[in-house]
Image (spheres, rainbow, N blue to C red):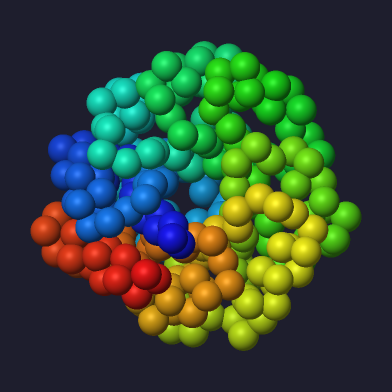
Length: 242
């Protein structure tokens, strides 16, 4: 079965609201959930996630909040998506130790290149919290082989050259990109960035092992969607990729 991973932002639209959305995504059929840790300089994120992160920061969302949610949420496996600076500020051994005790499924750090990840990798492996690396369409074949060697979980394929954000159309070369990476790795391949409709998700699921949906969900929350509406929205992706 192909995997569905919704993305939410910690503390958005509020701490309680975030918890309700986590439950809604799990009820809608999520296989796992990415929880973005708000950061002031989110270089991989587009305007929707940037706005959600800014609102969460203004409302006081912290890494400790993320750890508490990870320790209490059991409806679906949880991955943190954060940046290197917050991990360094929290101190990597403390970050991964707490994440491991909380049962976190893994951590995604977009601005940590695999070539410079050895120290963080060692710390994450000791804690049993695998790192998930990103692979973009500009990655060389040699770098894909490096990602295969360093990865202990799945590989996050970035569908396009750019930041996160819902798109009306995905690049036509997504399928070819997935096939190119698959020739060089045995790891599961999940595709994210730009997927905004169930129809797009279904097309991606034809070639990939999983689909990640973020900005399309958060945009609906920004527009006032309630948790039960988000549950239905996530369920529409579940039906499409199945």
